[in-house]
Image (tube, rainbow, N blue to C red; front, side):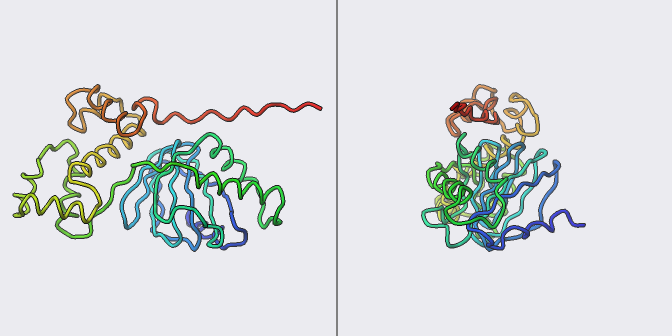
Length: 267
């Protein structure tokens, strides 16, 4: 049986919010698909790379990715992944994100996602299960979004340029150098990059290197190896950039939050 026949098993709108679990081996990749519900993808363990028509996102265990209704996507497992998915029906989306984005998963959000996995569907309105699911949606509304995406330009020349940079992340060719290769004025190239991706040329290249670094770190490469792969002069220079962009050191970024310690209530 196709391992991905389940992709539309739980998005039929039988309840306002449905949560399901699925585990995958490293290297597995889903086919391109979309859902009639919005979707929060989260990995309790492991790292995913999610690709949509707007770009590419990397999703470690401290992060989740929000996908609006009917957003086509493919998911590649960088490592073995214990995926937990929350499907949200169209009539429950008020105040929730309208675009793809990576969200910081707080300890509370993680526990709500895990608790939601045991909720049977359908469930009664105003029941304990319904209140749990509504609290989960409330928490999504508060989660900060993070710059872990790599927008893809719309024109063929810039797509080819981006593909070339992705294949050689340690290449330091300047904007002027790339403009000469494309027989284009450098200022024109910069304007087109900004218009098509929302990022400057330099910002896009930093994001590409950051995502490349996260993939390599998730696969077990050392900070030294990753720094050299990406063209940094030293591990400290790479670590400084990493912490400035993501607010954590390379060695601590993939740490999974500890389970919440609930107090014991005694009568």
